[in-house]
Amino acid sequence: MTNKTVPTNSNVVDFLATIEDETQRRESEELVAMMQEVSNKPPVMWGPSIIGFGSQHYKYESGREGDMPIIGFSPRKGKFAFYLTYEIERYKDQLEKVGNYQNGKACIYFKRLSDLDKSELKELIRQTYENESKKSYVKD
Image (cartoon, rainbow, N blue to C red; front, side, top):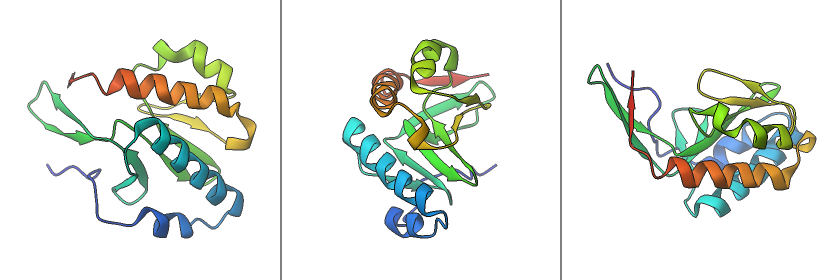
């Protein structure tokens, strides 16, 4: 089985230009700058719609393996999906300081960047990047 979410050669700036909602496009550009500053890595398109920073290998107990960005996000219709950690509970206190969020299976959803405490968000991104970049993943 081939992984769909892999790094591509697609241009992040070109992808951002396709976002129709002007506020979401501007906020996406701000998130790219914030995540790039924290990670010190260039933004890379993973699949058609995830902007990721850094790369990390994972391996399932079944033997399936691949790579994923250490941190990333996807601007979706009406919300942002943040890919920061698989251990959401570990960051619950920090997430509550950031603002209103919803948990997904492998992501955290926020509606608008402008609704969040950006300094707390940057700290959450910093914490998760530092912690996640040290891990080697083996998943069930």
